[in-house]
Amino acid sequence: MIKQALSNLKITALNEMQQAAISAAKKSDVVLLSPTGSGKTLGFLLPLLPLLDVEINTVQALILVPSRELALQIEQVFKTIGSGFKVNCCYGGHPVKIEMNNLSQPPAVLIGTPGRIAHHLRRESFGTKTIFTLILDEFDKALEFGFQEDMSFIIKQMPLLKKRILTSATSMEEIPAFTGITNPIVLNYLNNTAAAPDLKQKMVSVDAADKLDVLFALICKIGNAATLVFCNHREAVDRISDLLWERGMPNGTFHGGMEQEDRERALLKFRNGSYPVLIT
Image (cartoon, rainbow, N blue to C red; front, side, top):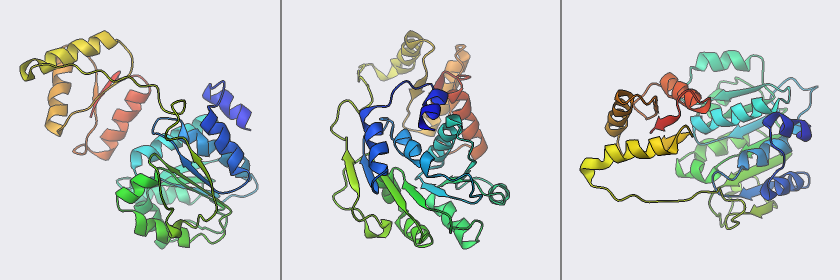
């Protein structure tokens, strides 16, 4: 199954961290410490595949994430894997009615933010008797965002868990007791340069009055490669977007002032290449 998944993902080989995660998950619960962008998503999705049972038609695995964007990203990767198992997302800002309809025919894998998943559990939107696998992705961020109470509540509703996988992009001196993780295999790749994304940082010093012109020139030099432009304020996002459109450069915008549907559409267009530039 994993071999076919890699073929569907057009990946020829796994990195060291991903291989170690698959091996560790066969033996015990896992705590995976690895930098953002190092491939942690496959580090927990691939070990999950052999744990899913085609004979079970209710939720078998729950993946908790700190943000809706991460939930959608993981959902997309899981769909690309082509396992044949149904997957759904639940997150704040998404219509509850749609989620309830999706859960009426339960997915094998449910991905969601703690607040929304806790909401559905209180409404008994889905059962927990067949949830044997729990994945806490970007757990450090989830704690930072204040999701501890919701996560604790959720985990208490799943007494039959057999496998727990926790990922974090920062070191953790102690794993909170509410996770139920007691004797995990800890894989620490935080200082492993091979696991870190291959990034180069360059700085351009420029007068404030020339920033937009220089930004435009830099984006033109980069060419058609996918480009993210980060700004300090929403107003700057819209201003720079308008400037680029005026100069004939298609781009998308992404910020908290946009409707959820518009944000998701912007991410989709950036992901499929419709917009080579995303300003956020």
